[in-house]
Image 1: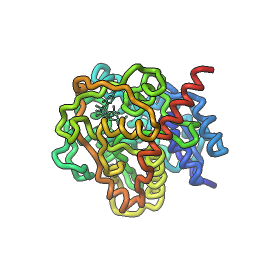
Image 2: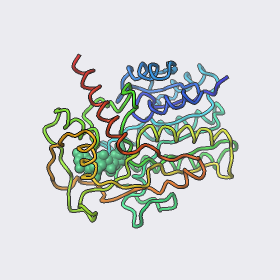
Image 3: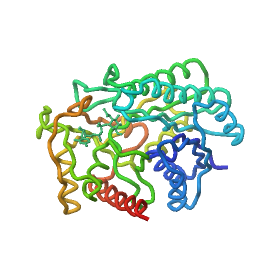
Length: 344
Ligand code: UD1
């Protein structure tokens, strides 16, 4: 029987791409999602791409009784990939209690489910936000974690600590935390992509919305950072590359190699791109103009961060492969697809 992976938040952006890669690698996928920031139609997109519709349970992971019922129903879950979380940095500052309740409550419940149902492996969706603005670049996994700049970032740090404490208390369990840099792009089929319920807050979907005319202009937040062109630098990683890293992490958990029960990996390309470089790439690849204006910095933004992802290369055998051109093409194809879906 193929191994069964519980993917929490599996109808979301990274979760849905990971579900596809898991199915294509021969795993059975069970998605648990409360659909608060994603849509049921994503299941159909996954089926169209892979030919297989994942199992789906709609519930909130903060509800332990429902999680127990789900684990009983599917009997043997081999591993969990935990994506489900609130993730808007700004909103977490104004609604910290909801963020702690949701992101930490669900984490506690999943760790209890691992313990009570003997689920041996967990892959956790973490973020480069745990590093703050590091002194030295690129960022390795040894770069010190800094006091979180937002309640959202703090939920990622505390979740990693809770996982480590749980693993120290119990024999036989393993976990991997994947610290993502900036996920962008969509599946090449344009059958799945980032499709949040509210307006997007990240750079790439805002660029494509500007290109398609949903927004009149893009605001570039600050050109006075200590970077070559003054705009912020990030490490943008294609979401399909990111999804493949989760399959590599699940395999690593299965193999039970290495002495550490809890491993952490950075997932990025190793290359930083500025906001103006991103805009230029979209303009060149699509032969279109992005209407933009420089405005003051966005509170809470840092100037520059990019990854050293060599540990993931050495241990997981994973590397980001997609050139940025593929990010541009897939993001644009997906924006056009959203436009079609919302105009029918
Ligand atoms: C944010 C989150 C991070 C999360 C990531 C992907 C913070 C501090 N971090 O990263 O935890 O993993 O999203 O979901 O918020 N920009 C503009 N104009 C815009 C939007 C963005 O100039 O309209 C700039 C930003 O200033 C930044 C870059 O584009 O330099 C990327 O921004 P964004 O896509 O929002 O991601 P991050 O803020 O890096």
